[in-house]
Length: 159
Image 1 (cartoon, rainbow, N blue to C red):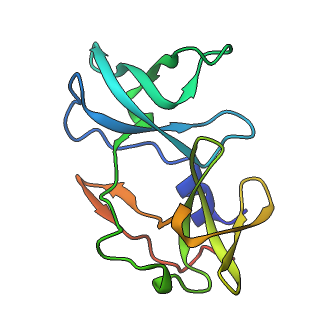
Image 2: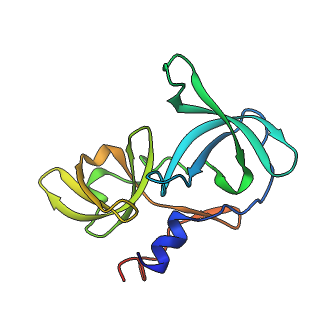
């Protein structure tokens, strides 16, 4: 795995301003098999300076009756990226674009390594999976850096 991929997959978020109750966020997972994924959540409450209680939007309790709640470190929390549908049509994805795919209840980091008809093949470097998706479940990958969203440079991703 390249250094650039490790930096994206294991990134600790910079704490610019504390999140408040009700803020919509994404929470990074660093668990085996889930590295490189983010899950949408709402801040229930801050706990001190470095922890948050969150309620997930797409993860549920074992019996799937209620949304899962968890306490997470601030370094795993970032704002929800801006909606790209206004600026990106499905025709704008290109080979080797770094993307996030909404699958298995969260957003997963990968890159497009093939396009066949309407399907975009995405390679996930943290799991070594290569899976075809329709364009409507992809977004261009962005990193939260110094209080703003940036598109990471592609250099270093593939070596």
